[in-house]
Amino acid sequence: LESCSKLDGGKPQESAVTSLVRVCCACGAQDKALKLVAEAQAKGVKPRLRTLSAVLLQASEAGDHALCENVWAQLPSLGLEPQDSEFAIMLRTFRGEPKRQHALLRQLIEGLPMPSDPPLIEEIGRVFGVEGIIALRARDPPKAPGREEDGGCWHVGWTTLSEEGTCALSGHSLQALDVTSEEEALLERMVARLAVDVRNSGKPFRHFKRWLEEQPPYDIVIDGANVGFNNQNREGGLFQYSQIDAVIDKLRENGSRVLLVLHPKWLREDADRTVIKRKKRKLDQINIEGAMGSSDDSAEEQEGEPEIQYPFDPITEAEREAQEGTPLAFIRKWKETDCLVRVPAKDCDDWYWLFAALSSARRGARHVQVVSNDHMRDHHWRMVGNRAFLKWQGRHMTRVSIWSETSDVENCKVTLTPPDLYSMQAQVSDDACAWHFPVPFVPSRAQQLSSGRPLPRKEIESAECHWLAAWRQAS
Image (cartoon, rainbow, N blue to C red; front, side):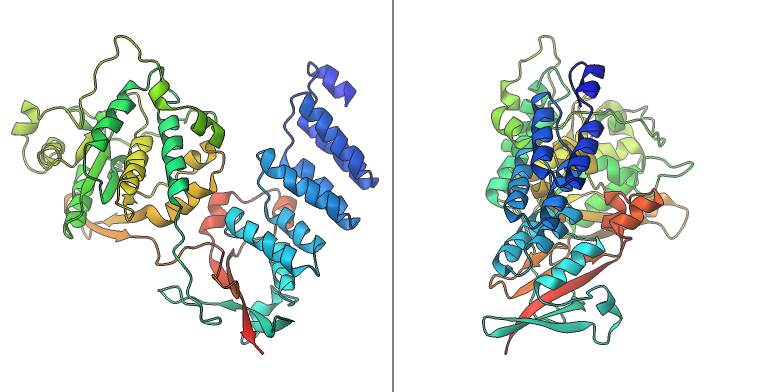
């Protein structure tokens, strides 16, 4: 460790620290391993999950419950989120202690809404007294009785859900889980912080906020760029104004109040409509403390910065004279119907439509939906993996499919897919008598690592899911 530190200006490499921690754990010296982690932290090295996971595993195999609890308690303060392997270790450690295991399962529901690794799935089954959960899928019916508890008997099985979210085995209905008002307020602050993070001045965004607060809340916010490029990611693909207009018309059929957010480059008379893939800039993450402690309102205003007129510039002569069906004619229509807002040229439009939706929810439109196929993984990463953001996405993102029965893209058809009536994430009933876990069918973590191809989160989330249910019936 000292040699590595000398090579890097006194700061040891994280990989060297992890290797030494694993050596200590292999020798049964867990306390020494934790001291090494503390020494590395003091020299500016942030431990990774794999480092502390090695200590957790060794402590578990040694039956040292206190050390397991100690390591587990350190993870949140280090900004580390336990994954399938760590939850499996903890559930295995506390076999025979149902209360502690149930507490861990509640943590799992909040932190790991879609458990996927087979060893973890097996441990979940053992919590309720059932072995061989993976093999249980081949049985008919795919369920088995488990242990008795409080005058009832647990059962575990692979189940199906109705469109309304009712479980075929337990009879319980799954809920649509949304964020709390406090979580929503924090997300709004984080988005405001990120919206001005790459600028020298937050003045344009502050003006946008003031304008937005003067408007009634919106029912629907449209990610214009995403809808315009829907189904266009191909050779010869073009930004389609007609697609955006078709979505707006469909949404207005039921009287929804709609806001279309667009970058000014799409409002130019000479707009380049071709599909261009640009390398994304790597930006820093922000944490909850950063959002709580700083505000875009405190940003210094940059002298000479041009004023931004919201929601858009007046209708131009070219737009007024544009023929129906042309890009400028669509822009004129959106301005005339007051559904358009244009973001500053140097800003990311994503933060604007996201903030508009969160602001509308805070001001009474709790049902607000964002129409976009953007999964916002970069946004989630920049929020340091904020779980509330994923939960909010699950309830407020409407996906869109646009197609044409002919080669004429001007006569396109639109299908909108709102969120399911229940949340696609692990949950427990109010009386704690029924637990449900969506399990993506993917190779185990060990198989992924041995193949040299760990699955990205995107692939895990898009994999076919089967539901695992555990429910207690009266004896």
